[in-house]
Length: 482
Image (cartoon, rainbow, N blue to C red; front, side, top):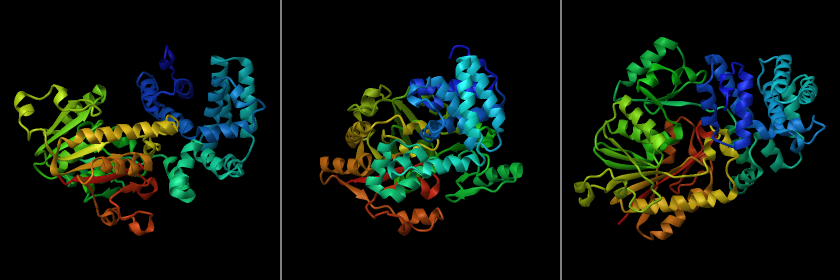
């Protein structure tokens, strides 16, 4: 980053972030955090940088299309730094209603003068002035995109999803549902919080929240979970979160734990590919710190963060294990078990196993917009093969009569239904799919009923992001017969 992190100009900081992201295609969340943690920006300006950096990446295919209509130079011929300044300017002008056009243009020109050339600054000034000369610019932007005649391209540009993903979803979910998927995943995400009843009662937490903020909450699952519609950031920065009284967990993964894993007191559970640990924490709270949960992941950095969360939340029944579930005998080879555990045939047998499988993660695009662009069609088959290997490696650790809960945060039949069918073929007559009452989930969520969807009673629950404004996800339970 050189000395870029010392900038006190939020737009300049966003420019640095976008330039590095589009050059290196690195993880956007980590990149933004790296710049903001090393900046001298105020909290308000940090939030501004966060929003516009993510906003540009979330919408950049549409933004680029719009820029191309006003530029006399093809975008492929533009200096990448020029294009990033234009992207930054257009996003603010089109998507942010409270930022004056003159401020957007002037700041963009100054950044160009400082970091590129004066001639580039003149070009940027001309393009942005041409664009911002329109009244009702958001309507102009939408009209230009809606004039695209090919449905596939129109959806791709409008919601900034690569055409191959749009085509894949249309083939599997039809065009109407694909539009709803893309639209929801291109909105700002809802943040969901769970209450840690190991440290406080549900009533006390809501008393603290409502006395302090006097706000209206959306509440789920007998009050164990909630979301706020206006400003979730204050809770992400609150003492309630810092001290472990509440924790962040998306609604889809909450559903997977509550209705599919169904953790009971004193059970032995294995959580595979567990980091950042929300599902282990949720299961531990529901089990009231009884039994044992072995939480496995191969990322030391993420596991270190997970261990810190366990301490502050007062969780004692979770044992974290650094291991790679792609390897056979991954538990035995982790070097954290004593001789008794390794020789006792029942010590490494579990009642239930949760597999949060490696996947394309398209269902997380609302909060991680870069996932829309960092995969190719061939990656889906590679991820599918890895997930099958993990399931195979978990089989030896599951008791007869136990179950594996398979979960992904993506919307992809190849990585979900087709994968499970392949797994069942490998373990013929040894596993069966558990039929979970999806109707009850919809009833509990006050969504209406599942009959208004395309859901089938086949044991799979594809959580479309437009159901509950949560991550897109897929889950099912596999019962081990013998």
